[in-house]
Length: 79
Image 1 (spheres, one colour):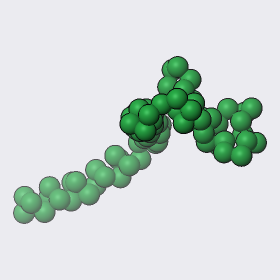
Image 2 (image 1 turned 180 degrees about the vertical axis):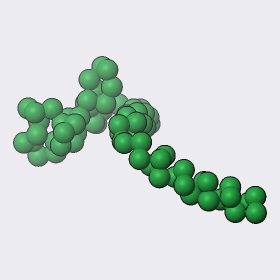
Image 3 (image 1 turned 30 degrees about the horizontal axis):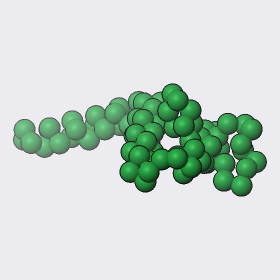
């Protein structure tokens, strides 16, 4: 819900009103005028961008916790 503009959070389908790009296009808009292919392309682009932002916002603990496992593999390979 944090991606849904406040004025649409009480709508029947609030996720249809999430802005997908800098033009402010939403799934609701796309259902009205875009082809299925255009809709899929715009939504896919938004998903990739949003996932990238979310992954970039995660703490770096993942890479730090992976380091001991990589060191253990290196050590095992050198023995």
